[in-house]
Length: 389
Ligand SMILES: *Cc1c(COP(=O)(O)O)cnc(C)c1O
Image 1 (tube, rainbow, N blue to C red):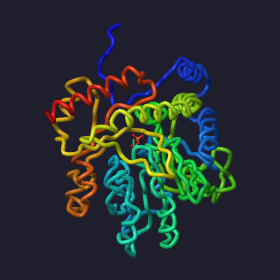
Image 2: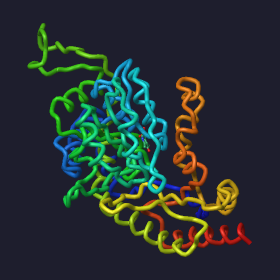
Image 3: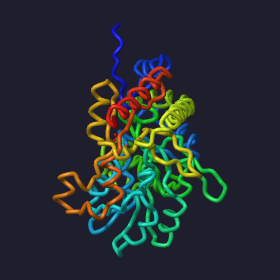
């Protein structure tokens, strides 16, 4: 078999045990709405240290349902970051609320918590911070702002499964919802664990978990204690407008099997990030994102910032040499839909603009061999040298 030389920016790691887990569901009575979903949810909640986990069909579905459960609606404003995947802001728009973008910290590309207060209006109802690249945001500050202003916090932790942060000498795992109402994750193959497609919401609030479970299945309940009437054993009630956002048992079995490997995946991601940090520390033309004290990133991606180096040319040189570089992300307010609908001015986001103009994501995934890491390092450094000479 010909070995493909192209090294993508991210990819899943599936082993025989994962395959057996999926096959055993295929041979069982349940392909969906069976026991594997709940088993995965229990184990995921335990991993995060949250009371509840609700599995859904994608990270985007998780964001959408969390935004509904948060009560966001027409006329509301919700604060988020422009440096994220479009799904984060879209989830706000789905509810009829308006996303209000707040600029990022130049050194981490996470939302600048110090700029949130000045963006709060009488209509602000919530904050969706994104733990960018896997590094947790300043949750202590965000939490206190939310408490002062009675705002709901939904952490978008699609990048940050397994990450931790410190508040007052104590470490918290992302997903424990120690400083938020809900946290969402994605089970897309480029993220930390794969289900094909999939997402999870964690929360410590029983009422939110119940609401999320109903919303993922058309807003229907079969729980007799919650019904307004009961015509007989066939009776169920649709109590709110929900969706079919269920995760299948096939996907849940894969996610549950993958979860066992999460700690090893995160350890390997951190190791590769350290190899990159070390290799690039002597090269002044490029700099990695800064890891702040009190954070332990789980490194969904590894971003380099170009310093006086043309990013587009750098990008092309690396792609030509089979390094699957990428750019995460185009600021959301630059997307045509958002430009038309909200006409946000890029001038208000100097750090997001500068980040976007200089950022490049290089390959990082657990099954990368040391040889592949070295190859990326060599090609990155030689491309820099070629460009400056
Ligand atoms: C991947 C991602 C999502 C969406 O997750 P899907 O499972 O692809 O729907 C949301 N937010 C961020 C920051 C992401 O990276």
